[in-house]
Image (cartoon, rainbow, N blue to C red):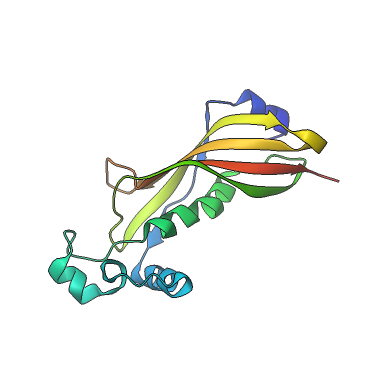
Length: 151
């Protein structure tokens, strides 16, 4: 889709990603990368004994970090754009824990496309990370991306 197509889709769903498995290996790799080794994420035995879920859960920031890649899978970058740069977040809510071995997927709604200087545009999307077989999403985040025009 072109940038003009995107403008016409304001308020509409752009798409839904495939399901992604959140296994212990992914959780452990995120902990190693970030230094966040809180037991509720990485200590399987302790989580079985002490966690309300009786198993480990994914880091909230791990789930938030999935949005960029999953949104690319959905196709949030229109034709004629050379790059989409992370510009920030307007609002993030962590609504439900994601137990180990759950699957999540991303649902993206286009909120707005705003023209900026130098042919750039600001893309606002509402991103809902859904948990398979759960009525409550894990994360809802309003993201901003700066779209740079193709040369």
